[in-house]
Image (tube, rainbow, N blue to C red; front, top):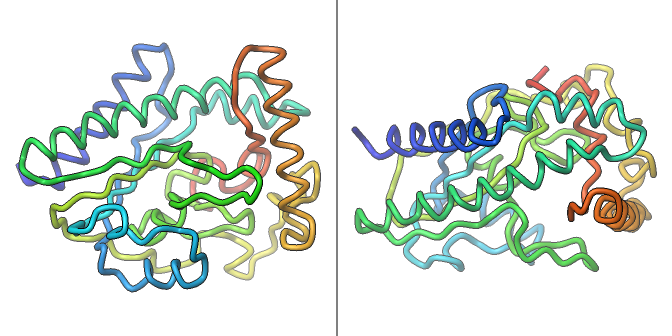
Amino acid sequence: MNLRRFIVEFVEEFIRDKLQDLGLKLRTKPLVGFASTNNYLFKTIKNIHPWIAYPKELLPQAKTVIVIAVPITKEAIDDNARSPGVSKLWARVYVILNKILEGLGKELTNKLRFRGFRSIAINPPHEFDHELLRSKWSHRHAAFVAGLGTFGLHKLIIAEIGAAVRLSTIITEIYIEPNSLPDKELCLAKREEKCSTCIERCKVSALTNWDAYGETCMLDLLQKNAEYLMRAFGIYADIYGKCVTNVPCSFQAP
C-alpha cells in the first residue's frame, strides 16, 4: 500500500472508530488533502499574513503539508441552527472533534516517524492570540492550498463536505503527490449567485465590516459564549458557528 492511501485510510478509520466509541455518527467521510511545501501559495499567504508560519519554518526539511477536514455531525449542525445562541451539542461535538484530531495527530506522526520521516502535528486549537485574533498557523489557508475547498464570504473553507468541519494539519518530510486546487469557486456568492446567508446569520454583524469593527465584535461574542458554556455546561469553547449552520454550504458545497 502506498503512503498516500495508507494515510487516507488511517484517518478515515481512526475518526470513524473514535466517534462510534462515543455514540456519535459520522455524517460523511473526512477529507484528506496534500500540498507541497514548495507551493508558491504558502509564500503568498506569508506575504499577506506575515504572522502565519511558512511550513519549513516549523519543519526545515518538510516536503508535504497534510490537512484533515472532519465533518461536524448532522445533529450538532441542526441543533446550532435551531438554537438562538450557541448550542450545547455544537460545543460538545466541537470539543470532542478537537480531542480526536489531537489524538489522530499523535498517532499519525508516530507512524510516519517510524517509517523514517520526521513529522509534526498542528492541532485545531493552537497558540491562538485572543487579543490579536491571530495564530502562527492557519488550517483554513493550508486547506485551500491542499485542494480541500475554497473560501466563502464567512472567510472559512467550503469543502465538498461543507463548511461545518474541524481542521487539523500535519507537516512531514515525506513527499506525497499534492492535490490540485479546486477548479471552481464553491461559494455561491463568489460564483456571482445571490447568497449572503452566512453574513445575515451573524448575531453581531461581524462579517458586514470585518476590518472596521467585525473582529472586535466577534471576539467579544466568543468570550461571552465561552463564559456561558462553562457556566451552564462545564464546557470550555469560545465558539459561535452560526455562519456555517442553516446556510447552503453547511453540509456540502452548493
